[in-house]
Image (cartoon, rainbow, N blue to C red; front, side, top):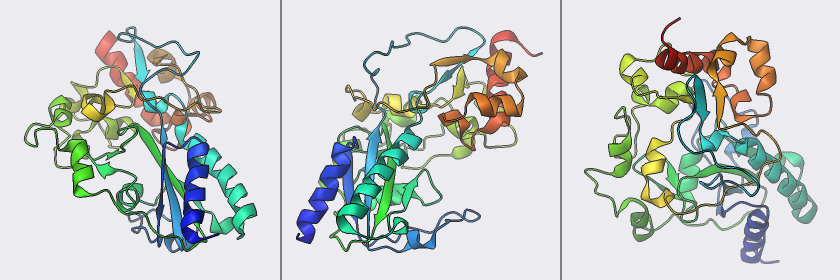
Length: 308
C-alpha cells in the first residue's frame, strides 16, 4: 500500500471511531513539556509520525438526555458541559482500540503507539502544526467541524507518513477573522477580563484556571464573578460565533455527572469520599482534586448562603 493511501486509511479509521477530525503530523517532535512535568516514555518525543484527532463534546444533549435549563438551585454548583462526561478517558479508550488495530495491520510493538491526551506534551502546538485547527483569540483550538468544543488527543505512529499542512491564512481567517480584532466577543464576554483577545489568557484572572484547583487563594475580583461554577467556565466559548451552531457531542462509556451538585454535601465530604464519588469522572482527575472541589463549593455556598 502506498504511503498516501495508508495515511488516508488511518484517517478514515479515526473518523469511523468517532473523532470528528483527524490529521497526521510528521515527523513527531513536539515541544518539550513544561518544566517539572516528565514524559514517561521518551519515544514520544521522537517518532516518524503521529495521529492527532479531535473528539467533540458538542453543545446539544445526547439522545435520551434531558437538557438542563436555567440557573442551578441555590446552594448548588454547575458542571460545565465539557466535564459532564469523561471525554478525556473516552478519547484514550477509542485510541487504544485503534492502536490494537494498527498493530495488527501495520506491525510494530505497543510502545510504538503511545497515546497522549491531556498529557504533559503540549497539544495545542501539535493541533496547529498539522491543521487540526487554528488558534482562536480565546487561546483555544478552533476546528472547522466543531469549533472549540473538542478534546484533543493523539498517538504516535511507527510509520513514515507525509504530514498534513497547517490551515492556510485564508482558512484560519474564517475562524476569528469575522470578529472585530479590537473587540472580539470572547474578550468582551469574559467577566474577569482574563481573555486578552490576542490568543493568550491572563490565567491569574481566569475562573477556569482557579476552578481547576490552581492558585493558593482566589482573588476577590475573581470571586465576585464566580457565580455557581463548581467546575468549568465556558463564557468565552459560549460567545464564540463558531460555537453557536448545533454541534453534536459524543457518547461516553463512563464518567457521567449531573448538571449541578449540592455544595453543602461536597464541603462536608472527606478526601476519600470525594475521590470515591468522582472516580472515573472528569472531577476524579488529579485536578481540581478534593481540596479544589471543596474550595469551589465553598465559594458558591458563601455567595448563596453567606459565610459560615
